[in-house]
Image (cartoon, rainbow, N blue to C red; front, side):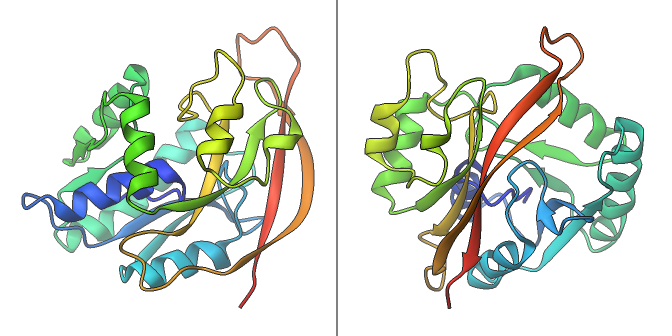
Amino acid sequence: MNWSGGKDSALALYHALRDPALHVTELLTSVNAHHGRVSMHGVRTALLEAQAQRIGLPLTQLRLPENPDMAAYEQLMRATLAPLQARGVARSVFGDIHLEDLRRYREQQLAAVGLEAVFPLWQRPNAELLAEYLALGFRAVVVCVNEQHLDRSFCGRELNQEFLRDLPPGIDSCGENGEYHSFVYDAPYFSSPIAVQRGELVRRTYPAPNGSSSTEAAFWFQDLLLAD
């Protein structure tokens, strides 16, 4: 299971665990080795490990340098997948919903090393997924927002019906375009909720992706700390 710690991977894992054709044996998460945080989400690895403990699955961390290029990322990913394959892993589960180019990239990269990609949430309507997420009792904090789409007031909020209602027009309600990321602190398959407390709210800037009209991209991050 490609586990980001956010709502989409958490909901995808829920369905993977209930699928008789799948047997989930591992969690795999990309982390920034320099900062000790989940890539993109900015969540401390201590919270990631708390999730894995409550799920009851072993966690493998793909430890990345500060700013890896794609060639370095793909080389590290292959090296990380090799021992998992040696233990019998044949499929890789993702929480992607509707980004066709991302799905093709994942499928091509995995096929090159003999693995199959699985997408339990693929092309399900956003409203349906979010209603299911809420009805099942998942609970999460929004830990990162892209300033291009959402202002800082959305960062650190509970991912609930009120948050979704407040999203501006034109925003993907599932954050599929990177508008926001979340940290799940309770799920139907957790042995217990994770007690967290909010720390510092931090703004960080990064070079804008190629083809962008701006010179940099800005994100707000809500630091979370274990409260127990």
